[in-house]
Image (cartoon, rainbow over all chains, first blue to last red; front, side, top):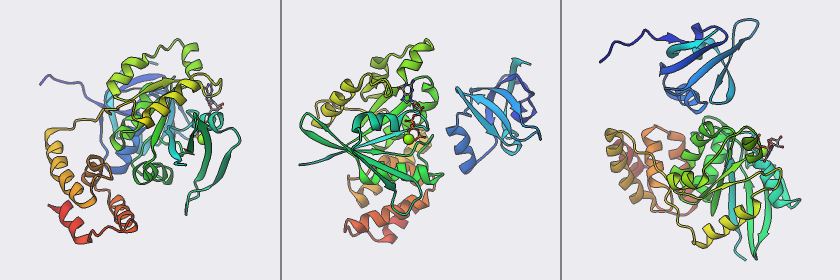
Length: 84
Length: 241
Ligand SMILES: Nc1nc2c(ncn2[C@@H]2O[C@H](COP(=O)(O)OP(=O)(O)OP(=O)(O)O)[C@@H](O)[C@H]2O)c(=O)[nH]1
Ligand SMILES: [Mg+2]
């Protein structure tokens, strides 16, 4: 096992950052739903825009824009690749 | 005459209704699915003396029944068993769209993948090798532009050949981890004992492992409707063992 970087939740990313998914800390229907929307391990996600009140946030994943609430994006863990 | 049922499935906004309109012209009826507020459209097409009934399914990202739309689309494919299912995918967003395509391939052998919006894909410089995709997925793949009426003849010809049995499909089926495969195997033979070969037993076993109780209930109803004698306790035993 190599020493991996500390994973951070997608919800902590700022606008313009590029993030790669490592893990979904969710189960059941919500997990299924996110997988179907393209939030799978290895997928690259960019943070497009936060709504005025901070929630939800628009993300770009697999050529589509998807808005997620903090409740969901905080359970998607990964690493920041760059951007912003 | 024996009318062949052709279902159109796909992600939202991939051009299913456009293809449906291109194929059926004005010969279509719309209403709701029985007991659902989801729009149901069907229309007739004649091709080389064969009559088809086209069914425009709701657009979904998945078929795991998280919504009424998904339930309607899934139930149609599994219980109504169309003679062919066309999976309409967006050629500019293949990765996302193939998720649903793989799910449909687990449910039925009679699938054609229609890569739509090929005009848009070409504009974006996206090159799709449909031959390679077809051999990987084990089903025919046809590139079309439903709006520009491009590739429609090839599609109709492919449908006709599939229905005649001139094309043999071998749909790609995901292999899961050994533990899961072992459970599928156990469950699948029990499922087959109970429901015969009329339903996709591997897919059904997967759904049971997933704890899809609603599906189990529906299966009961379906089988009762077809007058088969399967008692509930047998199902209980099948999934508990
Ligand atoms: N450029 C291009 N646009 C297309 C093509 N086919 C459909 N469209 C457009 O894509 C949009 C969506 O088409 P629809 O036919 O409504 O898609 P749908 O799959 O029925 O959508 P839902 O029913 O909402 O899931 C429309 O604006 C169509 O005009 C095509 O081949 N090329
Ligand atoms: Mg439509």
